[in-house]
Image (cartoon, rainbow, N blue to C red; front, side, top):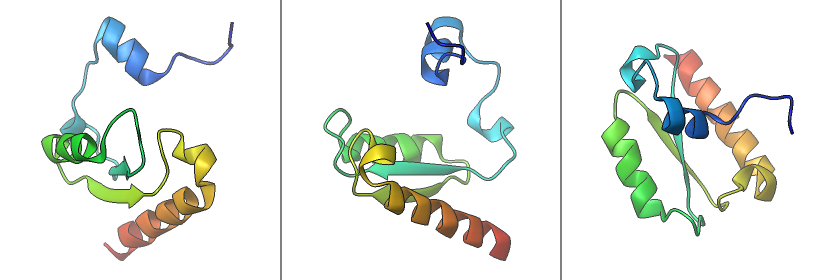
Length: 88
């Protein structure tokens, strides 16, 4: 149907992955979607804590599709993340 690859979560569920979060050496962030009806923010917070490994955690007001609901807030979060990484 689509020419693009499957989303990671589907592929990982079907075939597994060959790495874990600490293996990824680029800066990482976890975005908590405060208004996500599918996954409550408390669950997301627990996932972020479980992943650990230097993840920077951000929260946005959007729901499960925050990239479409609050794109300006997502963009601001990315800018903040990049600035923090540049400062060291």
